[in-house]
Image (cartoon, rainbow, N blue to C red; front, side):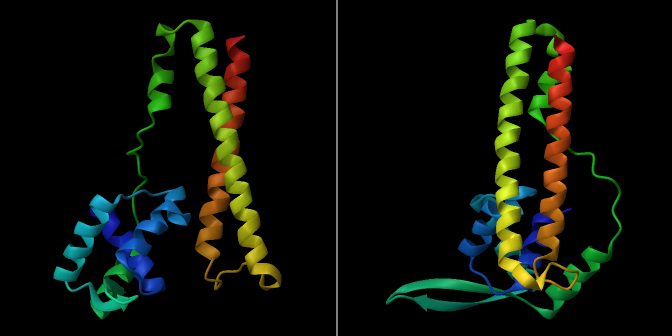
Length: 182
C-alpha cells in the first residue's frame, strides 16, 4: 500500500500546497510519526496527478519563479475518505535499531550496555522535552477555543499526546533496565 499517497491527500484536503509545503509538513507535525523525503514526495505527486487524485495550477512567486500549487480533486477526496474509513490490522512493521542492539546485548560488556542505554535515555528525554514544548505551543495557539473534535488541530493534538505517552513509557523502561543492569 502506498501510505505516502494518503498522507499527501490528507495534507491537500486541509489546504492547497506546493511540493515544498508538503515536504516541510514531514519535517514538522507529520514528522513526529511519519517520514518522507523529497525524493519520495515529488514522484508521488506526479503519480497522484496522473491518477486524477490531485491537480495543480502554476503560480508565479516573485517576478519569475513558477511553483505548482496542488489541490485535491473530487476523486482524491473520495479516495482519502475511503482510506480513512478502512479498518486496518495492527501494524507490525517496526524497525528499531536500538531494540535490535538490545536483543543482542549479551555480546556487549556491561559498561558498554549501560552507556548504550544511558545515551538512549538522554536522547529520549530531549525528544520528550521537544514534544512537550510543541504541545504547549499548540495549546497556546488554541487558547480559549480549547481543543475538541471539530478543531482543525484535534488530530495533531491526539498524535502529539500519544507520542508524549510513548516517550514517557520508553523512559520508564530505560530507567528500569538500567537499574536491572546494576
